[in-house]
Image 1 (cartoon, rainbow, N blue to C red):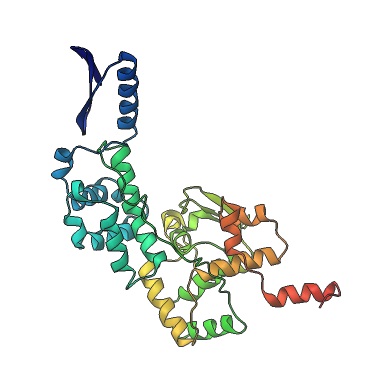
Image 2 (image 1 turned 60 degrees about the vertical axis):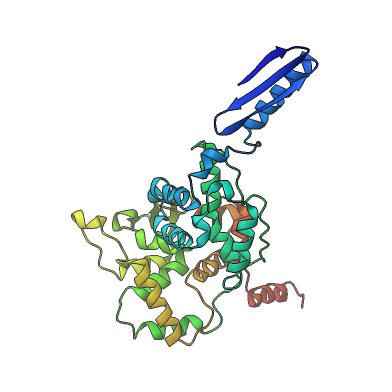
Length: 335
């Protein structure tokens, strides 16, 4: 709070806020003293004043990262991946710097160093939890610091993928899949193309989440936290029916008992055996969503299946095939 006292012919103002060094100034007029006090208190509340060097000196960036990892990341759905990212970040010398000496210039040097080995998009993704950590430390933990990443310039190229299955690739995946020892790899691939579900959603799907009579699947755990109920195509139902549906308590078991790591390794071997380059498992979601649009479904209908709540993100996943466009133009007598 601010204190004002008159000393001889001047008004002396002192503003104190926890986490910030006290600041003072003298004025000839009381009105000016009060206005300056209110202005400085507002700046302190907005974290716009220079933080107390004494309070920040004993805290390193690594201390902050470790607290964030323990208290916040551990309860997140993507805790495993984010923990790996933060553990790697902790090994960098920047994490040994005290918060009082840490600034945007330090992260600029870190950025320049990292961009020699990874793409800007990857770096931006890796710095996202660090940025969130600074904001949380400032607003919830009440640590008087400024977020050094706010002013960090990090230009990224538009990395949206337009990769879809090319002619003959599905057949090659099937043929290669027949030689794999894991019986669930091909069913997972077919199911992904039929449902537009994310890999994590497919792997978490339980038998009790599927209603064969109604032809629907309920997805409880999603990326955006909103559950959804989607209709299953005849192709998706065929995939499910080829698997042995358990009964009783076993109905809570997973439809596709694969770990994310096992699926990734199987996918890599499968695409290599099929001689298919530059095809990620997530591209199957692009393929599925694009097919839904080509079937004539509206954007809200596709979003209800894919789970997108932002139409802009939905359209990033929709890429019509040129063959389909040419066929429609031909029907209209164009081209």
